[in-house]
Image 1 (cartoon, rainbow, N blue to C red):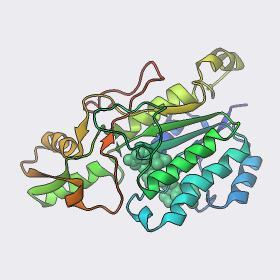
Image 2 (image 1 turned 90 degrees about the vertical axis):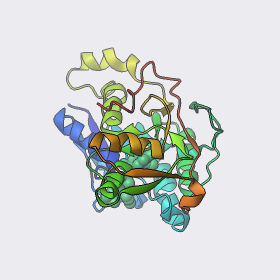
Image 3 (image 1 turned 30 degrees about the vertical axis):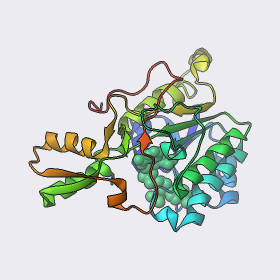
Amino acid sequence: MKKKICLFGASGLLGSEFKKIFEAQNLNFIAPKSNEVSLLKHDKVLDYLKTEKPDLIVNCAAYTAVDKAETNKEICFKLNAEAVQNLVKAGIPLINFSTEYVFNAPADLEIPEDYPRDPQSVYGKSKAKGEEALEASDIDWWNIRTSWLWSEGSNNFVSTIQRLSEKYDEIKIIDDQIGRPTYAPELAAFVVKNFILTQIPRSTDALEIRSRDQVPKRGHYHLQNSGTPVSWAGFAQYFLNQTGWHGKIKKISSVEYGAAAARPKNSVLKNTKLEIGLGDWKKPI
Ligand SMILES: NC(=O)c1ccc[n+]([C@@H]2O[C@H](COP(=O)([O-])OP(=O)(O)OC[C@H]3O[C@@H](n4cnc5c(N)ncnc54)[C@H](OP(=O)(O)O)[C@@H]3O)[C@@H](O)[C@H]2O)c1
């Protein structure tokens, strides 16, 4: 019997990339939509998992509207913290995703997995609570912190600056937050290869036994594209140079931009646990 994966958040930026790969690789998976199984309905989620009996959960569902979260605190905590507290009760191995917003690290530090959390925003605090729920549980869990996700398709920083560059000759972009962009299709492919296929083999039991040793240990992982850290303005400039845009990027500070939620000035994550990580952000695969 093929092992079964349950994917939550399959309509989102990252979840949609997992769904594409699961389909392409003919993996056995279920991906309930949020209006079919809402993670906010705890009993229903546990009943669903009891019935479906997946071998692994991949949770890409989250409340990701960082600025709106400052005023919609309750729903943000319900999805990013309480829903995870509930998911672990199912006792099923769980791959969860988190963010560098759980940190408040000084500039020039590449943030390792065991760096102390100190979230500064409601979103960051809610994701930190979700992480605590994993740490308090007995299940096998892998919490993959990533940052600045983008892809060609969905609504994200790259699609926004592309749209703005078609309308304006000058775009104002924040220059005092430094990080590394992460290409969502590359992250999903990496996680499938290194965290999922090692425990959900495609065919025989022999393969399953052989690959058990390769399953990474439970815990936190940092997966962000590698390469030279860059500001949002630098990332936009790099991306727009390739489109042949001749406009100007006006670099502004976070204060000038005036977002509702505080963002980390330092979003540079260090992978200290896996032998290999993701490729250079300038060369997404
Ligand atoms: N985007 C980034 O730059 C970034 C950076 C670092 C970490 N992360 C983390 O990466 C993960 C994926 O983020 P993303 O950007 O792909 O998120 P996203 O595009 O905002 O997608 C969120 C997903 O959650 C689902 N969802 C919302 N409410 C739900 C509910 N009540 N029950 C079940 N599902 C629900 C949404 O479904 P509907 O469409 O049906 O509402 C959607 O599929 C998250 O854990 C996030 O914190 C993201």
